Image 1 (tube, rainbow, N blue to C red):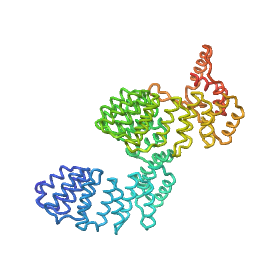
Image 2: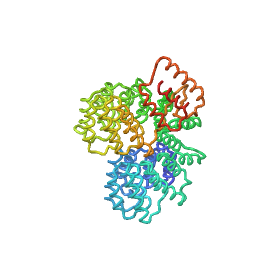
Image 3: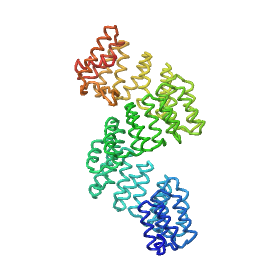
Length: 590
């Protein structure tokens, strides 16, 4: 190396080689030993730091260049250093570089303008990115792509779509990176139609064969709920990378297909693919959705094995999994060991205690969260209000509800109003709940009346229940249970005309009861059961045992509390056989 550094061209090539091999410390050693450096040497060293996300080191090199040879700064060096600081934490450095580029006239180069747009977009400053874009006189496809991708990454899908249409209208041909940005925007908002249109354009332009594009397509279809299309794209790959595996696993989880997500992850693990934080987080969500503790524990061991640590996303997901499985002790241990607890982590543990009937501890955690200086968000207050509901703390619930706006400037959403209705309803304050619903100015659809109707059934307040039920009928609810509950209320009052009217409404509107579903974990395997189906391999043995249990209960003198309710349930199942109906009664009674 010492002999090579005497020639600036050889040493620059050597420096560039080390950077491209991610051997940046070796590149820096060559750089420091160079007696002479040209603008390409500086640009290569800055680019090396940029490739390894070392924004501060890249900025220091740039400052060194300005001090030693300011005449060598040009558009190549400026582009490289702007690329290096294109991270959220690099905004202050990026603003300084922007000022220098304007002062030295480097903004006339389209590559510098593109880098500025990207830098501001990655820092979440889309207004500043748009200002640079609007002032650009030499836009190209990369400029447009940077804006579209920036909007997509910052959760503004509508602006991304609008910018894409403007790009086409201006006569620019999109690149594969442009279209991937559009697909990402489609994924964020579930815009399936726009996603399919983008897919068609990709096929027309010949971009579909590229792995980068195919991965985005799989992700888009999965997040838009088209798992079949996503799987078709997934199966076309001969060599699957972790991005594709993660997209499919996350897609199954997002669409509630938790068992399939676990099966796919097991296949991935068998093939020796090392997961990422996002993969682990998605599989933990699947375990939480199934309350599958054993697979969750196995995943915990893999977290330790691969050294992921308990950073915010993994730690929060792991804590949530243990809480959803009823294992609050381990969930709390995970939470306490997290190095940094953001609002998501606090929400996770507060929700766990609230949902497992330990409301006092949930509220204690909320107070601890405030003492540690973490500001609550909308989700936090949902968890806190749920804890108040389970504990019957009406007054305290009102205090927290009003505190949202007064102390934290948070406008209550539908979920918060629903929690307050639930708090009042569980406390037997049904008239107060009715008055509260009627005082709400936001559009709440059928949600709040449905909560009140369910509470009236439990407390047997038929007057308020009938009022809530009629509100739901007037709104045209598609919830079958609302029709059944209202019909039962009228039947209990022997108002048979109203019973027939409600049942006729249900039939005329085509409302049918969704079949119930449950699952159980046995010997590390998840068994799923759906009412009316006989697909389980042990169905015959299970039915035999259910009949035995039903007969035993009957012999012991047990009788259902409401014969009418069972008849209603069976009627809504429609085409179930008599034997299946008997099994349903047995299963529910048990």
